[in-house]
Image (cartoon, rainbow, N blue to C red):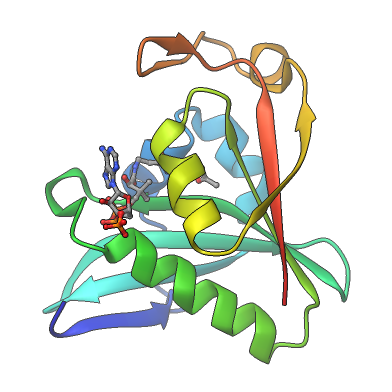
Length: 153
Ligand code: ACO
C-alpha cells in the first residue's frame, strides 16, 4: 500500500488503546505489558491504522504481544506489513528468536503467522479462561487456550 509508514510511538504520543483492545479485549491485561514494551505503528497519510507491540524476554527472545489493524483497514496487507517490519526490527536488534501467541479460536491468525514463517511451538492450556474476566468467542469458538508460535531470526 502506498505511503504506509512503520514507525515507533513518539515519547509524548498517546498509546492507541482502542486499537490494542482489538487484539486484547481487556485493558487490565494490556496494562501488564505496555509499560515495558516497544510500540510501533502503521501510519497511512498521517493516520494511525495499525499497531504492533513487542516485549523482550531476554537478549535472545522477543515476543509480539499485540498486533492490531483498524477494522476499516483490515485485509489490505497492513497486518502483514506490521509483522514483516517487527521481524526485521527484531533481527536488526540482535534477537535470535521471535514469538507470538494467539487464541485457539484465531483461525486467520494461524494462517498469517505461519505464512510469515512462524512455527507452532506449544499451547498454554486454559490461559484465556484463567486470565480473562469474560469469556471470549471468535469464529463461533470459545477462546480458551494460548497457542504459541516461534520463528528463528
Ligand atoms: N479470513 C481469512 N483470511 C483472511 C482474513 C479473514 N477474515 N483477513 C485477512 N486474511 C488473509 C489475507 O487474505 C492475507 O492472506 P494472503 O497474504 O495470502 O493474501 C492474510 O490473511 C494477511 O492479511 P492482511 O491483510 O495482512 O491482514 P490484516 O491487515 O487484516 O491484519 C490482523 C490481520 C492483524 C489479524 C487483523 O485482522 C486484526 O487486527 N484483527 C483483530 C485483532 C487481532 O486478532 N489481532 C491478533 C491477535 S494475536 C496478537 O495480538 C499477538
